[in-house]
Image 1 (cartoon, helix red, strand yellow):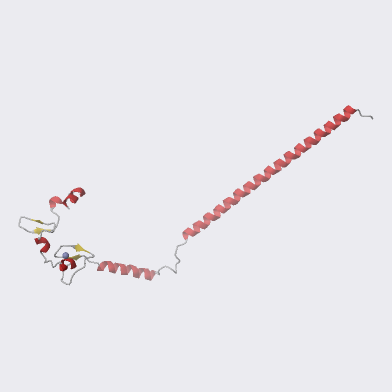
Image 2 (cartoon, protein in one colour):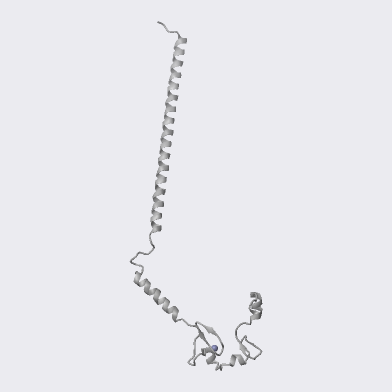
Length: 167
Ligand SMILES: [Zn+2]
């Protein structure tokens, strides 16, 4: 059967269209495959990151629980008790020292050879009443001319600013 030129042309066009359609379908299939692979990869990556984070958190938690010094490096129970006892004894031995001349009271006062006289008063050769006689102490006298070193009752409720004015 002879085929006309127009029919050959039409067949060729149809063939070309079919080829193009197949090519398009193939491209679409490849694109879908790529996108599936990409989704799979990103989900794997996210899963990996979650795992790593969990692992890191667990390591940090364990690190926090561990003491910074090992048991061997630290004092034993008996040694700890001894250290505390020594400290308590040292605290019991601390006593206030009082100088009868300058009337000072202190934990760190250095005392002279003379009982109850501090080194400073001793070096200045102060007598017991030297500070009082020279009006160098904040004292007051009652009606019986008795000296008082404590704060008078009427001045006990002062504000800080008022106390500072007196000092
Ligand atoms: Zn003194």
